[in-house]
Image 1 (tube, rainbow, N blue to C red):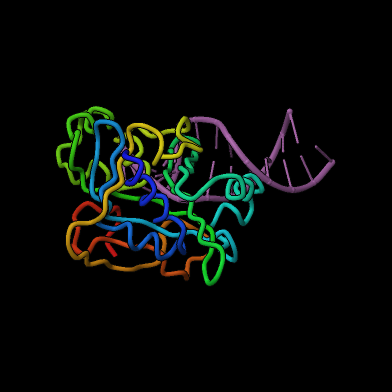
Image 2: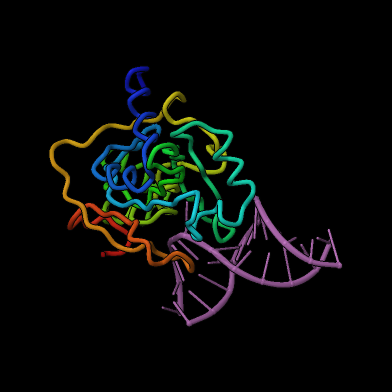
Length: 197
DNA sequence: GGGCCGATTAGG
DNA sequence: CTAATCGGCCCG
């Protein structure tokens, strides 16, 4: 990504994680030969959010402390699924640190490759990246990218939305604590989300 | 070292 | 509905 584009992208992640998660809907995310429109995200706050890894993991708190805004936070869940987050550093006046979990994309580029990585049996493009672990598998993101800076490392793309974006808000999915926070964001009426609101 | 949990998914 | 499967955490 070009230096000015990278600067813009990085500054995107220096606001509150909830704002970041909402504003990421409609943006273009690309890695390598594959890309798509972000249609589903969740926000996690480093403080006062029992669902965030920082709540119980010293290593997550250290990650927040040691890395700049926009750094990839990739971790293995259930022993088999890589999940992709971006580090948000919005602490300061009225802001917080935290993460944005990228949960689903509307595939745009590299659809045959996505399908191959998913095992080759996905007939509908809308089902290629309609979940956080499906997304990482389709894009080829895994533990090697933990700690990477997507906006200075080669191969990554982040572009702003084209036109107005209508979003839907709901509570977060799959967590046992902090269920009450309405920090999940969806592109309105998108067929590419994991679970409809 | 052992035990437990989990931001999920595919399959029955 | 459940099995799959393992890093990070805690305890000792």
